[in-house]
Length: 93
Image (cartoon, rainbow, N blue to C red):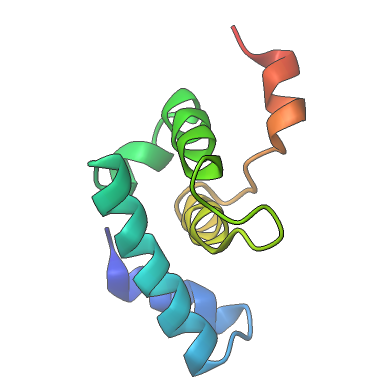
């Protein structure tokens, strides 16, 4: 994970220091839970999809902080948002 680049990206989006620290912490949680570096996950849409599905099993549906941190990292690395799960499933191979 490119933590410094991620922090700069989050700062550019106007997040507070607390918001940035929370997302960094949750991003580290994602790596521990999934067992892969975030760069590996976000480099492949299918890996991203699988990671989100896995996180859905443990995140509170009303608050999805780990999924949010992962989606923000995807946007940082890919310059675009990852689609909603239902949209992605329609285009999935």
